[in-house]
Image 1: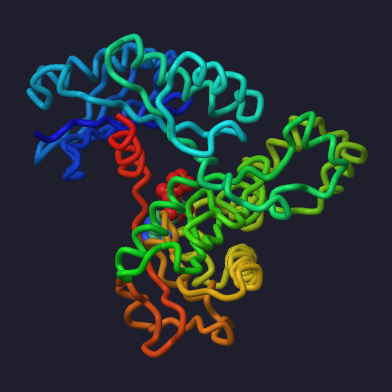
Image 2 (image 1 turned 30 degrees about the vertical axis):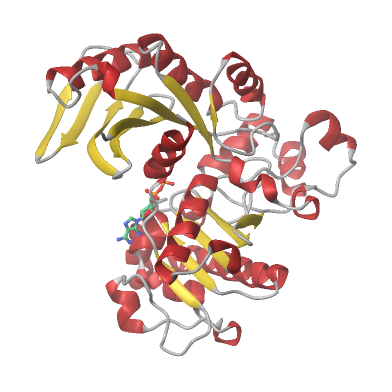
Length: 394
Ligand code: ADP
């Protein structure tokens, strides 16, 4: 008898859902609520089978959206009754050091996720709203938390301790946590499956390149290092985030340009990256187009972005003592042959070389024949990973 599992990703004004039949992993329905908790009417879009619709609702809170969704699933006979739903899995941004794995959310777990709001003030509170809304609507159904940080809890301390006074780690929890863990773990496992190998036997570098971007070194099936840090601002350059910069820039700007900490934070998170350098757009498609028309700042933005990916691949190859597989995933990684090519150029000395046609076509394997490193394009599926963990736990 197949089981139905719901996968939920709650954002500040949105709620994404995907209903799976397990263990077949078939998507039964999926959709999105937008403009929740605002002055505007909420917008609901969904698809199941061949049916697809987008419609405006009333003004809705997250809880009202959850109630609406459950009624809707019954009304449309997507669920025969709510009893059919055996678990709800929630994406939770930050699990700190408390959660090295996904977990069923009891009272204690909920309290810890709440405490961790101070480390992820933009994300954990809205994730909690999602959890509490479903708990209230479905008191008999297990809620599961799947953390963006959990996969990275296996990093050795040399890779997560910052070289600042140690008390900031012990007293304030300041360390590298890493994010996108669900995605890195999912594509790493998929790569091993496609190769018919145990993930434990491979040295994998997973490049999750979307609007947010991070790279993970996966050694023995575990996260060994990753480019995001204490927050998702660190590491690579991104759509609007700067990634790693000299930390003194922050104090310099505060002292000399009279910027407040909030100004500096907004500059680094919302005005930097592709957008900041190109002064055109945060969207890599616009940057690629402008660069092809010889816009120098778009070209520079592309060069910085791809160079950072390349240097991180080089660093992680050195850290792991080699590479077997490089994976490209997420919006840019899955779709842009040009960016994949730029990221891999000059890496032939590591055994990384792309086949032009395979790369253009976005095939699963895009390395040249006879090369020692497999280069793969694997669509990420965080929703499925959330459902898999939830199914396993319930
Ligand atoms: P996130 O989940 O972090 O918001 P996504 O993984 O959806 O981001 O990726 C969004 C990025 O993917 C955007 O920068 C967009 O330009 C890029 N993208 C999507 N399709 C293409 C494409 N065909 N070519 C280049 N970039 C693409």
